[in-house]
Image 1 (tube, rainbow, N blue to C red):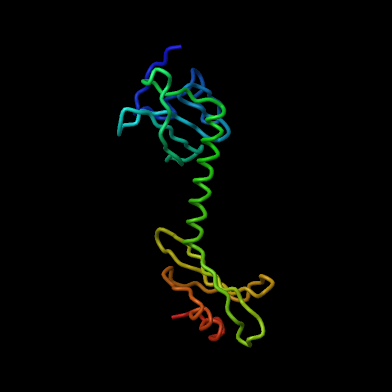
Image 2: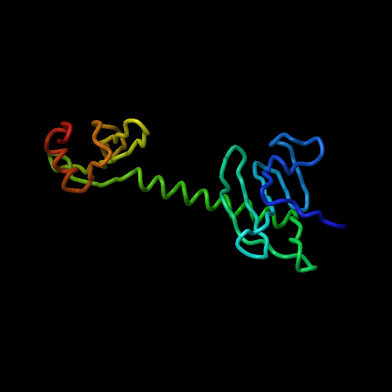
Length: 178
């Protein structure tokens, strides 16, 4: 079987089989696999003589993962994609996305535990930043030990949540800070 090199500027949509232009359709080719909500595409590595593979989740504009790809036996063309390689790539790309989501959540959500105003219970105080492009803001929320919301106020997205600022908010009867 002779592989015809594909130009690296081709998009995933350009690299479909005859009559299969829909993203949801399954494609299993040497340099393009589309299945299970993912597209794996082997591309020429512009930085060196080798090849790379990119994994794109359906509906996303940017790849979730780009990494080096193995050369074939002739040491010139890329090794063809196969089921095992595709499944491994899907697992790795999914993990990358999961970690990215966890990191984003950690940046947008903060939580501290402080004593209630009467000192008999503990309260969880959360700060959730809403990264709106036009008017970002944050929600400061007090939850009792059962997870019931006691109070919530809107604050500036740069509000610094700490044990001290949370305790001051509780002591001030949940009035909007600053």
